[in-house]
Amino acid sequence: MTLSAAMNIGRTALSASQIGLTVAGQNMANATTAGYTRQVATFYPVAGDTTSLSGSVGRGVGVQAVRRQIDMALQGRLWTSVSDEAGAQQALAINAAIESTIGELSDYDLSSELTAFFSSWSERANQTKSAAVVVQGGQRLASFVTRLRQDLANTRDQVDTELAASIKAADEMLGMVARLNQEIADSEVAGFQAAGLRDQRDQAITELSKLIDVSVVEQSSGMVDILVGSTPIVQGSTSRGLELEKASENGRVVVDVVVKADQEHLPVASGKIGGLLESRGATADKIIGELDDLASQIIFQINKLHSTGANVTNPASAQGTLKIALGDRTLALNDPNNQSFADLPFSAVNGGFLVNVKQTSTGTMKTVRIDADLDGKKADGTPGFDDDTTAEDIRAALDAVPGLSASFTSDGRLKVDADAGFEVSFADDSSGALAVMGVNSFFEGTNARDIAVRSDLASDPTKLMSGRYVNGSLVENGTALSIVNLQDQAVGDLGGRTIRGAWSDSVQAVGVAAKSSESRANSTGIIRQSLDAQRAAISGVSIDEESVNLLDFQRQYQGAARLISIADELTQTLINLL
Image (cartoon, rainbow, N blue to C red; front, side, top):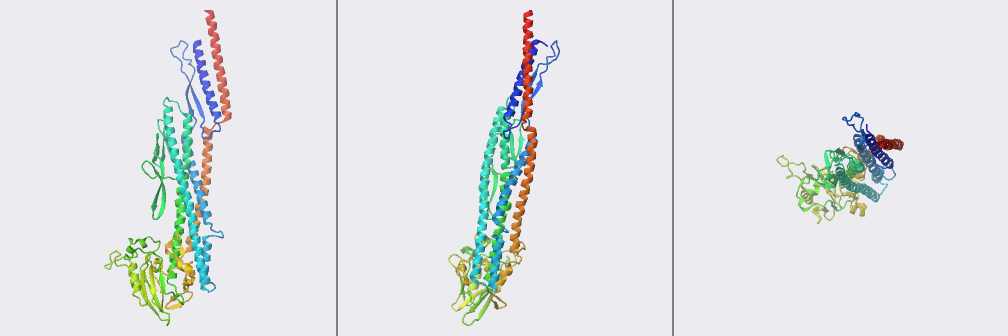
């Protein structure tokens, strides 16, 4: 090996050690930088010239590359765990908030209000409380239900607000990843890895993973594609964008995440957005829907009994609460095209009811049955609604009863008036038509949003119907007793459960969801911490290790400098000899 070759070897060693020192210094400087990936310089021996007389000794050391020390498969699992933990934590927060809003087993919950309401009817049946107490109990129950629903709806609105903000943040993060993709591709044209830019991109993807579950596919250009499920949302340097979609479905607002570019719906499963979507649909929407169903059945079942109630002295008129559009009055009550009835959460069925017209001076009472043909069949037996009963049919039948006149008010409510000296009451309504139209009802409204005690009853509690006719004889506490018994009766539209049982099931489901999300949040947190530790073992910076590297490269640098110095001295000696 010639002296010039020795000097060249020293020169390459100087360059290599300088790079090694720089890499070690960079690692130490970023030891506490979030998302930083340890860099490693890879060296290789430069092959010697085989044509040399001294043989192939070698020509020093070369730097092959400076690359990040990272396991991309592990990184992918870590991103998934970050999404799972964020989704579980978000679901836990919302479920806990809903559970707190319901406040069951406290001194102020719906179960207690139901108990108090039915107890007021029991006391009325025993003649220990006045009609005014029952009406006040109904007002308190209705007020509690509407307030509870509003509180739950406010929680859902907060979810929607946070969902919109999270989707906007995710959309911005996608734009950042796309921009970094382009910068990385431009920087790596010469074949050197842009470690800093890649770390920035990985950190951006980590933040994105907290919002939405993604999978990452790296391309040969150094760019990455980001997918949700099988749908790409970043392709190279192009972000396809995200946005929130709202739509009305069955009278409620549903939300979803779609791709801006083509409005494709994304199958979001986790991340903060996934947790928000899950909790909104499976918990918030569900409990609000179940509260609406419960309130609807409370309204309908109590109205069925109250509308056929009677007292010793009955009113001379009865009016419905349902506003029936002019065009719907001549359509069958069960016709899907009859919007006044089709949009209600309860419906009339095939059957009929009795009308009692009593002469006040003599006490003589005449009873007339009015049938409600609602079997959904025509006269020839084929499916159809042409021959089924309409609101106008019921009005006409009532108007034909001696001593009565029936009409529709200007806003479409059915109104029944007794002639002077007569009073009217109803009994045995197997069709539920009276309750559906709100005739002589206790409650008005259709669900938890608008349940209320009938306005004129609230103003005049003497209109409360506590008794009922049974086989033609008045039982003065008959309706009160029937309503008391209602709390323990299975309701078909509540899945064969009682009113109490249906609400208890709903509350328990919320509790189970909250407990499940808590367990999931704990388990996903443990998994994420374990993966974080594994990544730190591979990609994290050890100050001790880098300090050793610094010493090694320092010694290498000193050795290379000494080699060059010796070669230079020998060269000078050789020159002097010549």
